[in-house]
Length: 170
Ligand SMILES: [Ca+2]
Ligand SMILES: [Ca+2]
Image 1: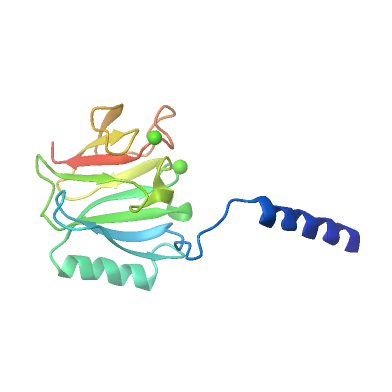
Image 2: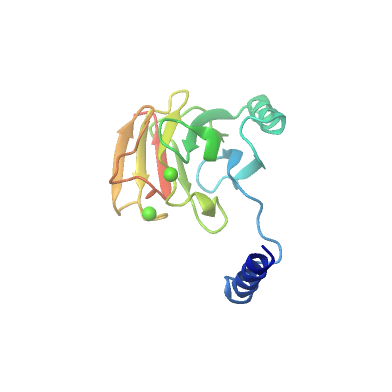
């Protein structure tokens, strides 16, 4: 065992020496979050995250969002069939229920970078119904796919591809 342990330590040492450098203040995992957004340019995304789904902390964040007149928009799932075990983000909007212009969400270096090319299913809430998914953030004229209502599986062609959403009423 000692020999194996030494070998393991050697491998770890190599990984530390040559692995990707982590920033000193690496962002905490964002697997389970409640996020709020406004209309484009109106306010920055705010988020509350925890290490497990549906914790007291996350339920409190949902209650606070509702209490401040935010509307539940959509929930993203890492896995298909709305399986939250590996990650779920629930979005609230501060500009009322989804209308024809709705909300746009782009994942970038600051906004849920770990959720780029990861989403496999989602649910929509309130009047949010029509979802346009985009392959590349901030490129609305690029490849996109329209899906209506709750989506249990985005399909093999769009699984782990999405970097942006437009969610609207119709
Ligand atoms: Ca996934
Ligand atoms: Ca993509």
